[in-house]
Length: 251
Ligand SMILES: Nc1ncnc2c1ncn2[C@@H]1O[C@H](COP(=O)(O)OP(=O)(O)OP(=O)(O)O)[C@@H](O)[C@H]1O
Ligand SMILES: [Mg+2]
Image (cartoon, rainbow, N blue to C red; front, side, top):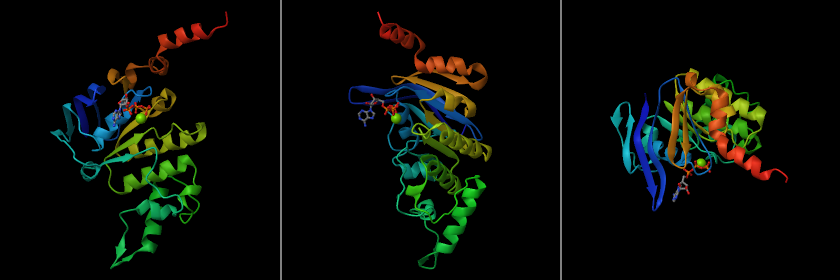
């Protein structure tokens, strides 16, 4: 395991956002975190990415306990997080966004030619087909933007990629595009933590599935131990849905 949590807990005032969460991700594997709204998914990834500190339990990187005090510290250990509202500037070109904050320099000047070339090469290496790296990021589709963010994290040396609901706002086709890049990052040896509501997005790429319900783990399953039907049913809160269907039926 590159990262691992043991009995992790986090409280916000009187709200117990996470309780006793144990999970991990290994190189070349995808761990999916599933759960309904408010289940604690974002809280968990904010702890992994150094934005929040846990109250109980432990968080280990390369087998050693850590307590990050900022996202920068997590990034320095190779843990890169791609948020839903990506930190990109819509009117700036793809290549500028690719290097945002880490521009290559030639002496004192920004090495534009190199930035363009590297951005183009890195996107191509991930199989991302952007017609023109000079086009503003705002003109890309949601799926393409997520893909650029993933390629950027890979280029800057991420070992673990943490993705908060990268496919939730996307249609079937674009979600497929992002899932392909998740698989590509995995094949390049990264560990991926993939947060989603959608078992249909999780199942095809996931090696492990952590289900959260109101902050508590409902289970951690290896892919061989659960069928897509079971995963969907657990996620949907099968019994609750049956009850709702009953309630909504016409008299
Ligand atoms: N900064 C905060 N201050 C107070 N309460 C918080 C804070 N962040 C999260 N919470 C609470 O913790 C619980 C878990 O929230 P979290 O955002 O982790 O859920 P989530 O699974 O990501 O939900 P969603 O699917 O809606 O994104 C919620 O009850 C939420 O209101
Ligand atoms: Mg969330």
